[in-house]
Length: 491
Image (cartoon, rainbow, N blue to C red; front, side):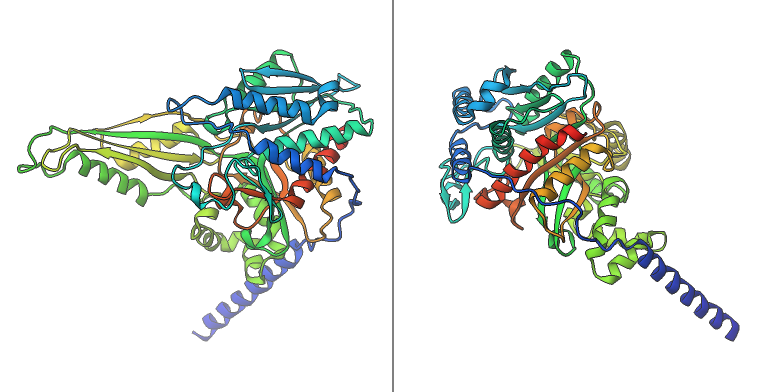
């Protein structure tokens, strides 16, 4: 027994030494950035006023079949852009695509080089009816107050469109001419599926463009490190995004009077299917951008977390359980399951003849629409329940290379205008959706990043109440895009 105890003690000591050694060996202790800060002069008052004015246009995308977009609002926004950025509209070619989307072409001096595509979208989501009184400022007022631009689109995503054009106007004012051709592709219906973005891509592919050296759309942002469990500030650059699938479950019943019910009504069978799905979540997988993100963030974490992340061979189950405890981090590790719509029955004393539920899945890279559908059928295990896809669907995007030249240009441009020595720039998995998904099969340097610092509660404001952007944060995005446009020459 004594020998066994000594052996176990020795094993514990060995593991302690090994894990501590790995933690020390893998520590990257971020040194001071080698990127020199660059001063970018911006017409701050003018830029803020132009963004505020853009917010006033009610370029709302409504769910399919509910209400058509106000094309006059989109065209008025187009005119606002023309008036706001005279050099852009003198020097670049502007085309209207799919009715309301915009494509700008900035010819490079060397057309043999692969181009760059900078993206954004002109549309916004509706304001939830009845919530208007909860807004501090009118949602389409474009009010500048208390250090913010308030209104729908100030974060999602007129902030990107306006910052790109402000950066281009500034670069043109100084006489900049890019070596490679740069496209600005601004869709008009990203919030309802992105047919405009697909049409923009089709136009460019028809022109025979080479695989872009960089594609950049909305997505991640500069966030307080506390939001992801670390210190300092973190720039999250989306290297991939989840797929989207909604499955409708339909159960048929015989109907009849409720006084003589069967053991399970259509609603009861549907409830059983829903319960099975919620009790059998998809497996947790730590790989790809999510794993890279955790590796880059661990130096700013408490020692115990650094120890675990530096020794996943031993602590991986514990790490997965800890991340699964929070919906936001669990969503980065698995395909998520969300029951969003349920209907069935017409009267209290009538047995339902059918019951339906819509279940939405956000599919992590590594799984597919087909594999998710097959697993759902298996988990439900009831051949009497029809399972059919409904509405918009898309596969998860390919994962872009965070060591490539495009990513490095994004990071360099950011560090030039945001010289915080504690800043960690990392790829991550976007759990929502963007128009960039259309390009990930063409360019291995397709990323998603709004180069503006965000408030800790920004995610509740996007698509929610009191959407707003800090004035200084917007100007950071403007400076970023001016630097990125110049840095494309070195790709």
